[in-house]
Image 1: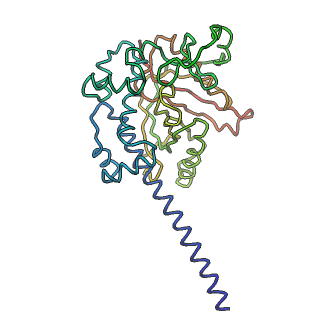
Image 2: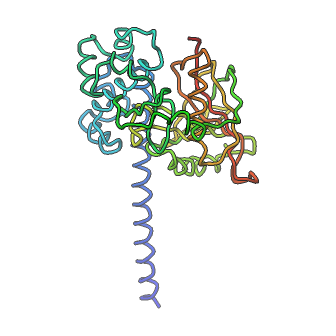
Image 3: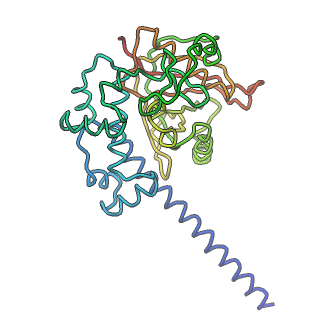
Length: 335
């Protein structure tokens, strides 16, 4: 009997140790991810400043040596490469969205010390200089993963033409790319206090981040029937490669929440937004975004310097047709 009990006690201890090791490993991963997210958020909020490795390491509470290795492991690129890419992609976004803004001002606003270094870096990354990039136009429509300008020129993520397109494209296929039933208006949107779990990559995989977010938030009483979810886009998918696009799966909160692990806190600024109200299936988000982008080109407004987001008003699983009731919100200012 004692031998039997001893055998099972060993099994119990073995299970407990392995379970503890798995929990510890997961907790470590979550804590490291949270620290790296803080660095990403700091860069986004201070893109006009000079930020070196020691500053980033200090924000993450790592030594510069260990920070460099951990950041590269989690993000898939070195801290300096990430910083440079974010600054250049922000510059590209400003070039497209603010046609009146001079290139010199864009360079300084994106943290470059001089125009020469900006010009060299921009051309090395995008393959064309800043002026040429601006002249090639902004991607408005998406079809089969290819992005097109308003005049139906196919554009790649680096601003170059990437294929020949049928000249009849706009006339024949445009209606397939947009939602004809639309309600879009300019609204003053309130500030949103959010808790989030960050996802980087394909849009249709963000559900994993929402699962983590709800798993953390529900036991803490942060989810009620009135709670609304928000997806905040930190990068422009017309410029940033899809595997690098950051999206925050978020919940609106009304109190100051102490977060931990992969769960972070963020604020969406109050301001003027173009708000499109849609009732759509999961497969129709691309059309809804195409509709918003086309409408914006004819509205007398241009994108402002803030994040776009989707504000969800229902649980699509409870909708009789499994549709999302969603507002697509794009920050804007007068041309």
